[in-house]
Image (cartoon, rainbow, N blue to C red; front, side, top):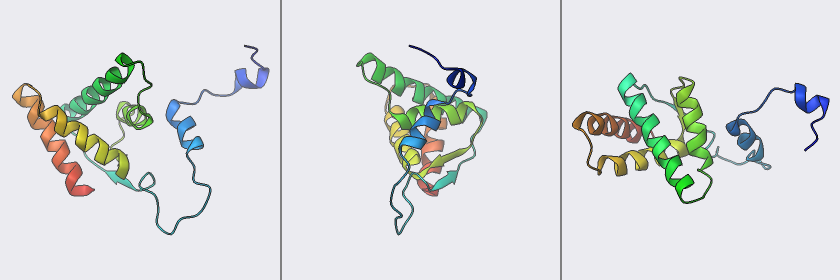
Length: 126
């Protein structure tokens, strides 16, 4: 691969930034897509850890199956790592489902409580 001077000097883009550019809608819609509807959700340190863990677990499952992890998982992971407390409506529902499935596993009570609390908060704000 040949790297031009311009490519070398341009700042690297995260996976989410690249996906956002690829997924921009071409036509105007009468209502905004779910990806554009942003919801804020306050997470405690423990809840943030559980969400982080669930997202890593989901990405690892994809990698184990020799698949690329879903873009929403990677983008949400980047946001959580950056300390962001916002999710798109689509990400929120997918995370909600992921947390509900996680709660069904054999978990320590603290993890289950934090996962349920985030899932309940997501269902209320979405």
